[in-house]
Image (spheres, rainbow, N blue to C red):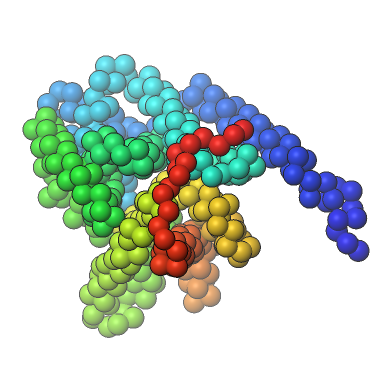
Length: 436
């Protein structure tokens, strides 16, 4: 039987009907997002803040009173958790310091509003950055955004991933508009909240945007110096925090290559005899150098400048999540920018169905949580079969990240082949808003 002969399926082949279905699904998703968010905000309690925000608040209190910003964290958790939790940098503690006078819960509610605002503004910026998205494409992107599991995990744990997404999106938006100063400021702010965005500086240098790279570097140095002077004890971020974070963790929720290698070592500590730890560290460092190096090498300024810039930033964001010492699922909120870039590129270039299917598969794998697999409930491995299942089930996000990264690299190479085959064309309308 031809599927098009079935009424419900036949209607899906009609463009207007598909758009109406997508609009309805977006309205439902936004309604759920708003309901979930309001309930969380109203019912927020100190117990719900115990995971991370209480540590941020303690650091902010210390910054406000001129004492050690890490004293409260060390007293609560000790140094063994410094490779698991998000250890707030001095800049973040200083940003939150004005809220400490309101008390823990009130400060958390205001911070949640900031997190929500960052998410919504980031979505608006992403849509402006990618005018090639059709009406259906924009609705599909919004549906994917408001149903993305990492978004809700970020909200649940009062994390900063949506702020990173906003800063990364703003960086790209400013760069496309040739506003080097703004772009440099956004890079410096992003790198002051999470170190990995510092790799945007060599990326822009590689793309020939030296003014952005230099201004970002100078601004980052200035922000870091001011933060160190304003927050006592903040030097520990460089002498203690960063070295410990670099060790990574075997935690089952760590979705990076570092996490996978750490889990293998934990399950087979004598895999390479006495050299196992050395081999593991070399593998982690080697993976980071290779993945970031390949990304920067492929991000060359060939073809349409807007595509080289957007695809380069998208590939770098994906690569940093792959090789980060710790990649929790809520960090994957930043993938919404690469997903939009890939979707817009597919819309314009129409390279074949395999790209769309690959993008969809990557999104699904990054959406999934390890709890979807029958892993040991006690988080202990008892048999070789369980070990294999744990390694597979805890690496699904990594597989999704790798797939998205490889797709973006193929898109970059496609653009470079086009540039060699035909004369370079201006990125006409790169930022013009498409008709609704």
